[in-house]
Length: 602
Image 1 (cartoon, rainbow, N blue to C red):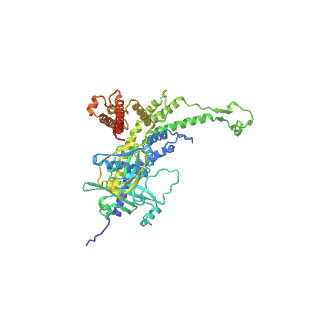
Image 2 (image 1 turned 180 degrees about the horizontal axis):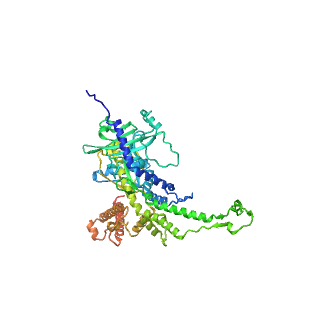
Image 3 (image 1 turned 90 degrees about the horizontal axis):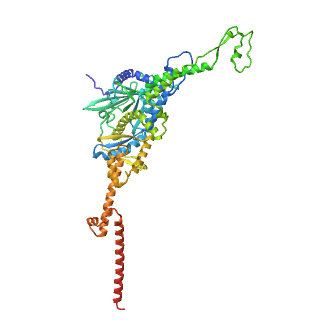
């Protein structure tokens, strides 16, 4: 008779299969890991370890042309730091979209996303790929939990070989070394089971001595299952062969009325919480290649030529001599330039001592070096104009700014790729808000006029639990100096042309339809509103003029008392008429009063 066991779905056998699968993923990713580690060495100017030994000289010059490329591109990315805004797809979603547009910047600010954006751009430029992780952290906000947006090192992430989208990987692993003491404090059941794990992740070549003997790899295993036509995301955290947490093992619902995690999965959106931001994409991998991969060969050649040129200069500046063994010259005194006398024994012949002549390098070598430097600039799009250097007699500030803007089109294209990844991050944040925000939260937001405002965000009241179709619009929070200059000049030109005159609103709106610039829609709404207010004001003045004159509006128009008719005397005549009538009425009243007083008996 067979005995029934209540073994959980995820146990030791499943962990062994997952570890073996992780080893296969690591083997398929080994080439990428080596390239990322080597690129980091180039960034740290330690690339001579990756250059074949050239001769016996110990001189190793290091130029930073490649580093300058990355610095320039990173500065462009920080100028384009993103700001999200939610746009509704239906009229019923307008209120929710407006509310989320106010809440999302607060969540990004609480996660210090600007630093995450900066760190990931360093990684993107060097390694060719940066990864964002969007999780629900139950320990945040005093135990109430909140959204966590983190930078994920690509060396610690493992996916199915051959796929180009992380979401299409059958399994996804994240490995991180953690102190054994910390693990035992959080999970006492690990006592006696740590030390010498069966899996090790790739590591960078640190300057400091990093001891990992008291650390153990903690593996986060994500995988998807299709249930009823829907993708369910499951998650397992384990160390060695010990399960720390598994969603499929959680059969009890945490909240009343909610489904258990075994049925619901980790996140309702059903996606892996990792999003890759690729610089230059490659087929067959979700990672790409970066500027170090493009420019490293030219950087090697530049440093080799620099080394040869410097070595030639040193050799030419350091006299060397051919000395016969029986010349009788005191070598120590001869080599010491501070000694006025050099002792010799016997007579000195010209053949006894002869200087070694060092031939200077031809100017062709310097031309080749300059061409290699230009190769890096042209290949990376990091020309002199990007860094403020102008040649060819260009001196006008507007011309320089226009050249800088035109030369930055490569950076703008790469930033647009990052914006697409940022939309995925924001969409995931919205999904986590819908799933986990279960109580009102007080947030400080930025008001319409830039002042501090306070919002009581109640998800049960303000958000629908069903997903709402929203479009995420991403714009640069900070404008570049050229953009600010061009916008300011355009605003002055529009003012001088009378665009802001309400009487010319119809003509201005017609002209705006043929123009395209940032803020055009807001300007169109403002001009429309001002034109409407002017028309209402004119109609009101017309009605008041007719009321005062006692004529119908049509008659006032015919008699010239309409307040808009050119010539301007209408308002003056109307005022004089009113004043004369008031004066005549006062005289008549006094006359009647005197007549009445005379007729009364004394």
